[in-house]
Length: 146
Image 1 (spheres, one colour):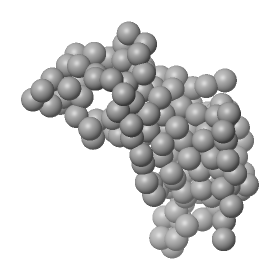
Image 2 (image 1 turned 30 degrees about the horizontal axis):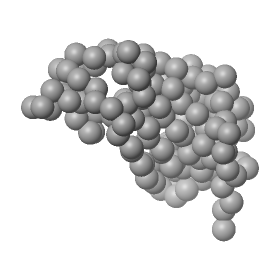
Image 3 (image 1 turned 90 degrees about the horizontal axis):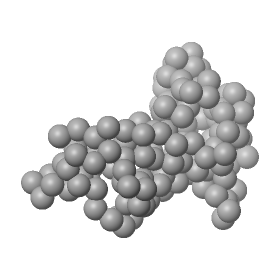
């Protein structure tokens, strides 16, 4: 089952053309990921306890339709790819206007970092249990590490 979350947008999310500014899309995508993790037992408290945090390697956004000043949004997330032990993973975000029209997609490529060593690390097994709650895209790929 996919994970969906609604957001009430803010005045500061919009530019002078009354369109959602490009960085607001990424802010809401990041917030949706963290809320999903928290709601599925892998919140910031668990990350702190395990001395890890998520890092973003890249995100790719495709704008499809405008989100106008005052419109609320809904984000649906999917698992696009993952390594076997969850060290690296990709989340696909579908961002919908309040009328249900797909406004943008964001593919975020992430990994885990050991907060004290400042090096990439494996997450605890509980993370693997958590990402099993995200619906996989039909074209899901396994990320192989070299």
